[in-house]
Image (cartoon, rainbow, N blue to C red):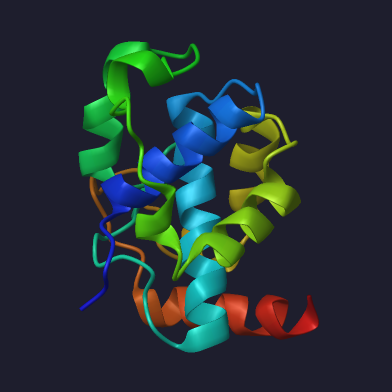
Length: 153
């Protein structure tokens, strides 16, 4: 059992983007969740969050987080509407370094570039099936793919 839900991690990325004066769309947020989960599994062998990632047409998605921020459409998520005024950075002390590294690696990339990148990576490629909605990307498959990346970087 992890300390954080995918929604918690999503809120951290939204808060961090706001602190960096960067826009964050739902599409980009989904890819950051994928990379955060993948690299954490690769480094520790444990999931960062228990929620499943699914292989959707535009790449990996955590459905509950997608639905939470769907109202933003393709535009940036408004932090003022989704974050508490007293966002608690300390609640993320156990994973903050990891999340900062994910942001520093992928945060500057455009959402569509991240989408295209996930489309070249085996966890999505071997899971996505256009005739099957909601195919879950196996955490073991994620770990195996990212274990090489985690130890290389």
